[in-house]
Image (cartoon, rainbow, N blue to C red):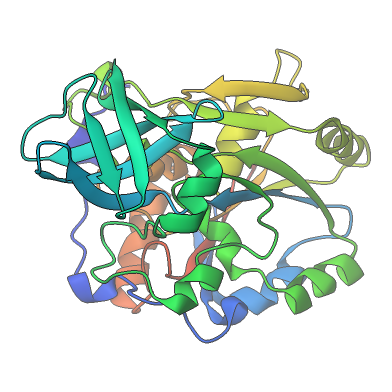
Length: 343
């Protein structure tokens, strides 16, 4: 299948982009896609839409205060967005400045954090902090809301742009499908007999980078770190054995699980990196059902859900969502998608 960027474009009115979360996490709407069937539901209906013996797998990454502003030693202003912490005092980061900083140059960030430019690594810069990188970033940095939210992060975002199960610090963006879950909903799922398990994938700044090639066969994904605990691999195996379904909460969880699958469709526990680029035609080995938000036009995430739910079905679902005033992107509403080859 020769796919191009235009195959994944759609017109989105700006007013459909959610700029703030709803008062309650689970108050969002949920569009259910099964084959060609669409059903308008609420996210609190999720326990009724899953079956006893199903397994929800969630990404427990925690968003860092990864955005820092400051200046170069030459005086020019800079904006730093940490992509990945690579050592106790080193990070990979995007650096925006009127003139690119040079190796050996120094940055003063948020007036108190000193960093040295070590060199380049592709589109990123290697920076060395004068102290523990994670501690300095968390103490002095700012929460990096996505670029389509046209306001600065507020105090409320400190809680609402993290999932209630966030534990492992390392992301520059939230795994947003998980933002809909709160304690009462998780309790209701438990009472329904739905199991839960966790993986970790640290979302990198590359998740917001546009696809810059027309021919998608030429696109190369950014790499992201993931961890699949042995307990999660065992829970997935047990779910398969009893005939339950694996339900991925978010595209990050799906990419983690499909990256960790072996040729026998089993999950291998451990730590790794993934640059998995999922487009229509991809054979899914692990995930049966996907919970996800609505994604940007021409994005790799829209390509992924099109592979999972079927291109025509996803196009129809997005038209329906726009026509029926669903809220889009990170703070928006959600979809529950059944894998189209399983219908």
